[in-house]
Image 1 (cartoon, one colour):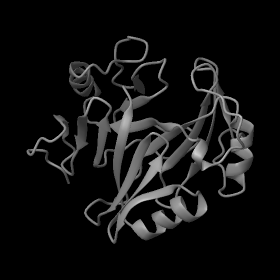
Image 2 (cartoon, rainbow, N blue to C red):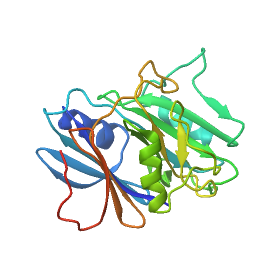
Image 3 (cartoon, helix red, strand yellow):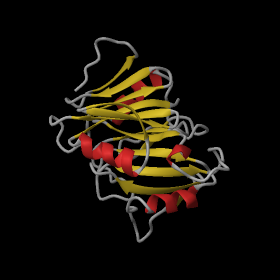
Image 4 (cartoon, helix red, strand yellow):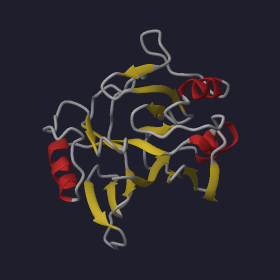
Length: 234
């Protein structure tokens, strides 16, 4: 499984575009007055302005080269303030053999750069925003993680370690060797390097198998094949 495209919602699309294009330097793919889409390595990220969604926020991560974490941290600190937890502005995940850093965008989204040392490729080039490989993780907050996991299993998306999905925890749905996951959880779980707890907000995720995951404004979780005209969006 890979994440091809993610569509998220915001209440100030102009401010978000300035941040992602002018400050971080992502390449602009599409824009109009209410939306913009950027290239995030082999994936795409789009923000749509909507006053119907009250202060939405999400957590998502980008995979970066395995040998570029220190460079990436210096590069990021020149542009944004890093998030801190327990007086640290980075974390090493021993079980993943990965280093990660976090920061906020103007909408309060929790953004992560993660270097997976045993999974991601290395790079000989200086770190830049073009070093990003893809969207590595996307939060997927639902009312019933067990029901959602059963639906994901039907499209061949399984828990990372083939363990039983935990209704009270954070479940990594995807293949460990790819380093790309849907972070399946229910409301109320605290995000690392943040004082925010998981909440349900509308989103749309297109996977590499062309299945589309939707959470609409009614907090309904659905999966559709690409091109389905009955998709219920916001």
